[in-house]
Length: 464
Image (cartoon, rainbow, N blue to C red; front, side, top):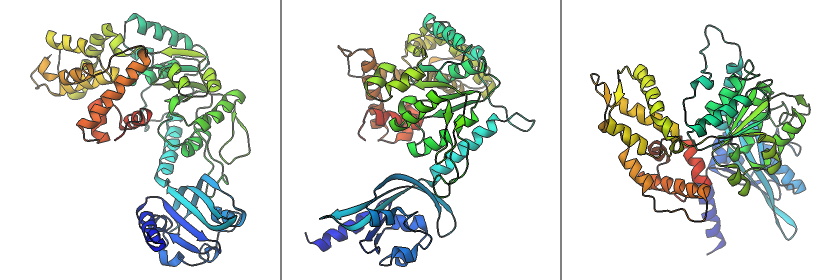
């Protein structure tokens, strides 16, 4: 294949890629400026191509341009978050990687690859704004946010009662709490109860899912940003500042980027934060409650959490049992959900027939209490207005139960944690096959959030 043909193929690839690509030759002239970069910066390709970089981007120089730094000083910049105004005056936020191309010790070109994260940045700013609004004193016009306490927790199984009793003791102090249990077992409900019946109940309670955002945004969300930290950055208080005096729940801590864990550890050790791009140390007093849907043994073994951070977080440990280990609680929960959805769906269900009860008690509930609630809600919604009893035909359990119990995998010497992980992987793979790899539909079938399913697909390295 000739060099011209290679060049043509590369141009086609760059034309259709989602990331913006800008390449300068060793004289500083633009030789590649793909469509994604053109859309991002609102610049026509003909305005940029074959022209000196400094003439086109007159407000940039070697001090604030990663391209010029790479060209003049051979500086490689990786995953730099930048916020700037494009030609239309719109604020754009990107993650940029810029590097020189060196052959025979000579820079022949410099390349910048930019990923547009404007929408994600706007989302993180919205989260901060909403969290700040939630933390403000209520007025007549503000909608009350449901605050859970131990009275909202239903269960009488001994293994579950032991966890709740330990949680009640934890509410009497400010030590860090580590809660682990499968998805849907009620970890956040317990975390809220610890806060709202504890010594910090009159202070803010803020929750953040660590799997929801990439490291570049999660860091700013947690610690805040300082004006001047990067081009266009604003002074924003992060979740630690907003939760000062109260509790910060770090949900799915096992999904927090490893590099960010070191910064979190420093905050826990020194009790102050420094905003991204800032120079001032801000003292904070925040209780940390963290949750994981995997056991400590697994996340430590697989290197998903730093050992030194884990020991800081794991002062008080709560292991929430799955619903299949709380069979005595199932009918108690069913009755609570019947009462709840009678009101919401305007129904008058009084009881549940024996056959339906038996099937509910036999089911394994891979989605735990959250799945049971969805099952009861769906059954009530299937009743006619004049029906007062939930019957077997109102429930959609049998197929799901058969799928769960017939997974072709037996526990050998691997232990229960790895066995359950393999079992969960099989169930997810089957759900994806049944839904033609449509993640949204597979998540609905599994009765979990789409985001949770994406995390599990990545966790188990499931090929789609």
